[in-house]
Length: 579
Ligand code: ARG
Image 1 (cartoon, protein in one colour):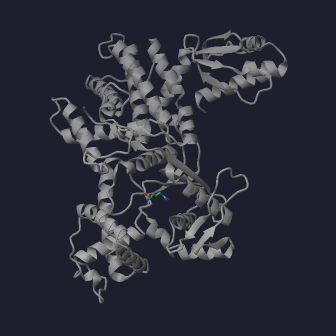
Image 2: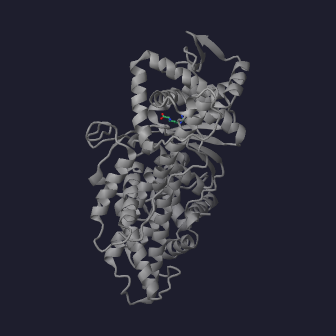
Image 3: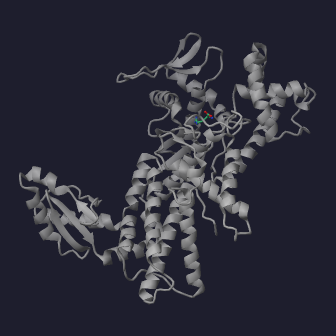
C-alpha cells in the first residue's frame, strides 16, 4: 500500500478507537507548508456531527496519534485543522521504496481493458497541425492507462473510405486514362504507377475542388466511390495504393512523435461489418424513414437541447459517418472484450458521438462497454486564429515539426557536434508535445514557438535540460566509482519538499486518469523539476565531503531522474543524451 494511504488508514483506526465514526481519512498536502507537510480537515465535519467544538475534536485526535513514528511534529490550528510534519524516516523510507520500484507510484491496480480510438487522420490528405492533438493526447492517455494497470488496444481509425476517395481516383483517371487500373480486363496485377505522398497532397485538393464546382464531376466521383465500395478490381487496387502511400507518410511522422498503434484500421475495415450492423438495427425496429433518409431517433426525455435524429443512410443513399462509427463499435465489441472505448477527437464532434453512443446503447449493440468521448480544444496560431502558413494555407504538421527543429538546432550548444539534427528533433518534439498537453484537454491554446522552446519557461525544453543535467551528474559519479544505492539522510528543506511532492504523485496520476487529461502531470513535472533545480543550485553534490550526504544526494538525483523519465515516457517525450 502507498505510504500515505497506509498512514491515513492508521489514523482512521486510531480515531475509531476514541469513538469517532469516520469512513475515510484524507490527508491533503498543506497549503501552509510553514505549518506542516499535510493537513487533516476532518475535525470540522466531526464537530457538526458530534455537536462539539472542532478544536476540541482536533485536540483529542492529536492526543491519540501524536506518538506515531511517522510524524516529526503534529499540531492543531483554529478552527480545527490538524497540521502534520512527516518524520525524515518516513520520507526516506518512501524514497527508497520508490527508488527500488518507481512504478509503484503509478500503478493504481485498475485492470480494465480500454480501447482507444485516436489519431484519425484522413488518407491522401495533408496531415496538418489540427491533427496533432488527437494523436498526441490519445497516445499519452494510452500510456497513462497502461501505467495505472489497464490493458489497452489502440486504433488509428484512418479516414480511408468515402466520397473523397472517389474524387481522387477520378482525378487520377482523368490524368492517366491509360493506366491498367482503368482497363475492363484489369485482373489485380501489379501496376507500374509511381505515386508519392507529394502527388497526393496536390491531387486531393484539386480533385475535391473540381468535384465541388462541377455537379457532373461530383456525380462521376460518387459512382466511382460506389464501385469502389463494391470492390471494383481496378479502383480497389488503386485505392490500396493510395492508402499505402499515405499511411507510409503518416507512419514516418508519427514515429518521430512517438506515436504508434496496435491496430492500423480504418473506416474501410468497419465497412465490412455494415450489413451485419444494418440487419441487427432493422431487427430492433428502431430505424425509421425521414425525408428519404433512414434515421434512428436518439432523443431522451431529459434533453434540454435539441437532439436531432442520427442519420444512418442519407437521402442520396450514402452511408453516413455515424453509421461508420456504429459499425466500428460493432466490430470492436465483437472482436474484443472491452470495459470501455475512449474516443480522443476534436470536441466539435461531440454531437456526432453523442448520437452514436445513444444509438449504440439504445439498440443494445453495447451494454457492458462504456463509450467515452474525450474531446479536445483547438490549437490556434499565435494570433488566436486557426493556424495558417504565411501564404494563408493550412500548416502541414511536418513543416511545423521542421520549423521547431530548426529553432532548437540553432540553440544547441556549439560543443555538440554529433547528431545535432536528431537531438534538436527530440527537443522539438518535447517542446511541441509538452505545450500541447499542458492545458486541460478541452482548452484551446495558441501556438507560440518562442514560448514553447524557452529554456527558462514552463516548457518541454526546460524539463529535458534538467533531466540531461541529472543524467550527466550521475555519469560523473559513476566515473568516480561512487555508489549511491539509497538515501540515508535528509539535509535540507528542499530535499524534504521534493519527497513530499513525490508523495503526492499517485493522486495526481489518479486524477489524470479520471479526467482523461495530462495537464496535471505536466504541471507536476514542472513543479518537481523546479524543486530539483533549487536543490542543485543550493548544493555542490560532487564536492560534498560527508560521504553519507553525498551518496544520499546522488540517490535523490537518481530517484528524480527515474521519476521524470517515467512521466515523460507517459507524455511520449524522449530525453536526449546531451543538449
Ligand atoms: N477522420 C475523422 C476526421 O478527420 C476523425 C475520426 C475520429 N474517430 C472516429 N471514430 N470517428 O474528422
